[in-house]
Length: 265
Image 1 (cartoon, rainbow, N blue to C red):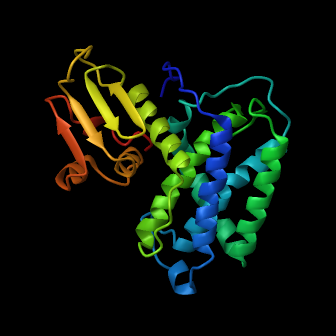
Image 2 (tube, helix red, strand yellow; image 1 turned 90 degrees about the vertical axis):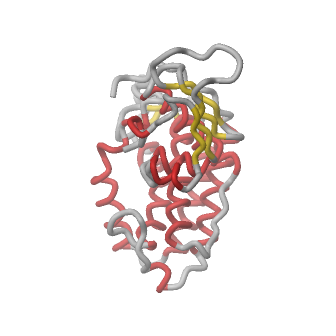
């Protein structure tokens, strides 16, 4: 995927930090209630059990500790809108790391407590502009935290899918940031102005090559809710499935996004 040319929208770093901590806190509270039987249940993530999925949430923040311990890079190498297109390349590596940590962790509560405490310490000590290495290249700390909202929200949804009885809540700011980043990534992947994608109340983007809409009612409109959009963008839900279940409203001959979904493979 070529480097993103679309300018990344601005995110309030203070709100992002609060959102990351809040979403992790919601998951931590829910995981603390799980029985051994619930932890052993399967998930929609291949052969991962709920226990491995729970452990993966801690890894989403554990990477901050690991990379901030390294020397600060000299220059930024990866922008926020580059990130969604690079994650698939390390999927197997992340999955292996998750299994290893799950196998070596006896006390989930202690793991979550340790990670929450350490993350708060890192937040207090790290400037938003601090460059940190990642698997994909150097990014600013503020940008990395926006990507953490995607990791935490997407995997919270995986957890709720595996255990519907949990009903783990979604922090509003975390859900908003996740929705917006994935919507903007769609506009990078399918540049153009012929289709307007609406994800109220968080995002509206123009995408897909063709005649550009300038005023009045757009001729091609796709509208859906944030969670359905996140599932579409990450491949948890297919376009046809979402349309058939009335989770997506689409009008206009160009309002079909099946060819450009998922955004994050």
